[in-house]
Length: 102
Image (cartoon, rainbow, N blue to C red; front, side, top):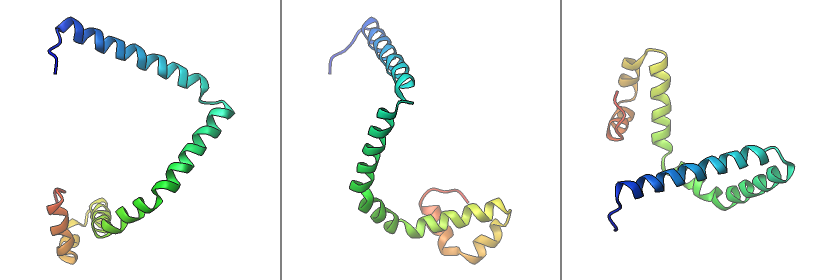
């Protein structure tokens, strides 16, 4: 990779920031148009249809973890973490392996 000078890096970052501002201004202008909304909805619908099976598979693979995490958050919210640890020791172990500090 090329070694860029400080001035070159600064110019690249400045050009990027200007481009982002232009894109943001353009989006704010066109976001409420009916044409933009219909195109965006169609794109989102297509993405959903293409990836529906992937999402379902990901959920099925992580169902136990998601259930354990949801239970933990519920017990934490109601200040009954000790009860959670006693009732569900296997969920506690699963959460600890995933990096959630209990």
